[in-house]
Length: 368
Ligand code: ATP
Image (cartoon, rainbow, N blue to C red; front, side, top):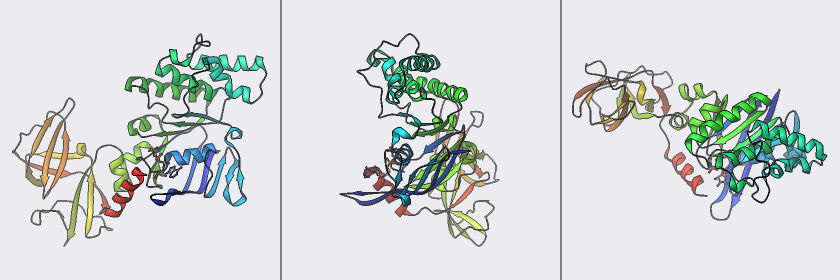
């Protein structure tokens, strides 16, 4: 069964200085039972607002939300179930652990609110502490513990009520990279043990890719694509998704008389198969590690403008017309700066030329 369902969910805000903003524009999505589903996108794209609406901290402007088959927000019926009655586990960055309570009290808090008897509280807290490797630290105050341990308290507090759905908003952002990685595994292990559904919000695309079954990439309040990490990387639906996940390199091109010319070079065509839907102005997108760099003439003949030796690859900047293509190769492919070379784009993606208005709107949202 789908555990979290959003139907036509929209959220509008009115700001004093910048007027109306549609933070979440007609979102439709279903998160399946036991799935780890991430919201991903640049600052201001609507991730946190969506999560807050699911949690019940924010009302909707339009649409409806269902949790585990139960409507919890339905704008047309003015139905709104408060957060504490939604049965969710939450670890929010802003919801840090309470410093004035010891570990036991922090974790017991949600059970006390439910009015659970003392014996059951003790039992459930002991179990949650065991699963988060905090046993023995019951009387310690969070301030005396490490960042990772504090984050485990927040996790223990979230799982103690055995929720079916967990909302995690940048839960690892305060931790150093090594700890982040091990906490990711701990979260996945807890998920496997309890089979809860996770909605995970993060800025960090590699973190989202490592942890998620599916991800939603959004931009400027709109869903761009919902898919598996692999499909989002290999089959991005537009230029934005292409550039957001992994490294990208783009060429602005014109299609004329069945040939493709990079901007700045009207003479030498790029040897590319033109898709049927191609307009005159297009963007050709590829990954820097998916470009063939050779010494022959089979491709676009140019030269190496810059060579950068990195630990695991060599990076080249290659002029193509008035633009620069970034190419990454294994160290065994070696060209020196200024040397003649030939580039060939292997199965590139084609997108409509980016409009400037979109860039401006993206920037505006990040400043509100
Ligand atoms: P970040 O990654 O920076 O947290 P986000 O993707 O979570 O960004 P949201 O916080 O959901 O984005 O914000 C989406 C848009 O709605 C932004 O333009 C933001 O400024 C605006 N917004 C969010 N909350 C409010 C509010 N309470 N009042 C006015 N505008 C808001």
